[in-house]
Length: 109
Length: 118
Image (spheres, chains in turn orange, blue):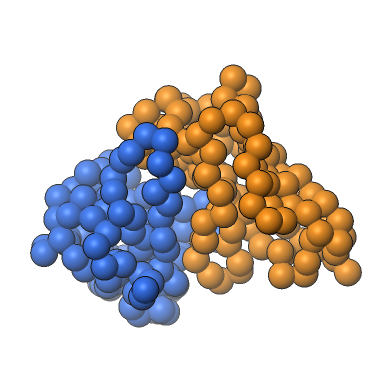
């Protein structure tokens, strides 16, 4: 079966750095997405990785290792507004998105 | 550029009643998705359209759920009859293309419809 694993919840301090991990087992791989979802709102796109390595976009970076079936989202200089759920999603061999359950990130002052 | 529009934003119905949701995707986006998101879970794809054709409806409970996208633009999702376990947020999303290896055609989501079945 297809499976995406993320921690259910993480807590971090304002101004700090946090890394949210995602491991996946899918039938084929055609890219990995990270989305941010604030409570009661729709998911919004953060990043896309299809090749191994690190993609940096401002305070957010995303890393991919296809051989390990592993990705992480790195958030630097955390702000209170970063409190949200972070969803990992993988495109499988049929180009369908398989979604993880999301990681709820709590930022404390 | 206008985003994905959905209505209603909230709906409360009793079990066994019917309900319909409407979605208008971003102009020019050929692919439209309906998702069900239960609290604390990731989105679950119900149906995917490419223009007005169905690409994937393998997880749509076809005995009670139906969806259409007649002119390849806006879409409706219907539940009849509703069950308690249908309580969830129904998200509509659109993207410019169905598939393209190596390209980040992310999905753009609407605000969702929060359905409560009592």
